[in-house]
Image (cartoon, rainbow, N blue to C red; front, side, top):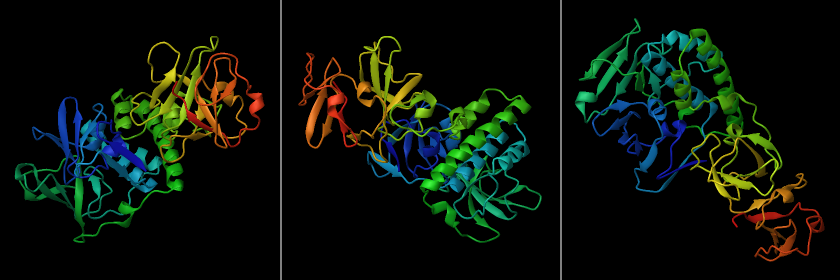
Length: 384
């Protein structure tokens, strides 16, 4: 499950799933999640989650229950495609691009319409919405910013209730043809198969969208919009099977589980190295933080890094060392602590290992080769 925490930057996809009453800070303004799932600042300005996401780095300030962390269940590919569709159509309308251009691209991405119903957020410019769809915008407790609208057979939204005379780019469905029913797909929880299908969809979305951008001669705002919708160029790159010893570009590291370790070493001066961890706090292109190293400076990412260990689904303290990765012990820095069958070994400055948990920098009594097979070794510590 995806976890959001107080004080952490919230990605665009998570912004769209936070509960009513959640507060975030962005560009020195405070925004609160509304009943219609829009965001309103302290001056009453309303915006969408996707617009908020591409406006900067939104930091979680408060959760409705006063807690520090919130687990968001994994999404299905249908939920991801629908959120993308809504955001893409509303962004096209907002920027003066005919929604039909977006609709043609969405069809190529296989992000077509789905059965809608009560509580589904929609783009009001979506021509595929059925007639007699009733939507609402805003909070009824604030009449000046609230409105209910019905779509007629001429594809026009008629005011039904409230002081607003027209709907915004996005709204929430109240009923369809007089029926108030929440569709089942809205509450489904994603599976491993969904996760793979989501990666494939994002890859397709970027490639199709890039072709549309070129044909329409759109400006760089397009990239910001796509980022706000949770899609970037790295999604179009093939995702490798991450394994210790594999060299990966920084953009691909974001696909690794939180808690995974990577190492960088200078190509000619092996005394210069750094270890990085995949972390929610990492706001660079890899989503990593520096753990330790001898490389001058405090960069939290390198352009290319080598996988040291891949974490499981949950954040772990210990990283099992998989069998037979080439040179895995050579990648460990001096001071790294490993364990096998209850016995601790610490890597020394000359590359050997000494029994115990304290590093020394003389010649150690045991070489890496003496340690034998390491199919049951565990990396216990990487801080020096």
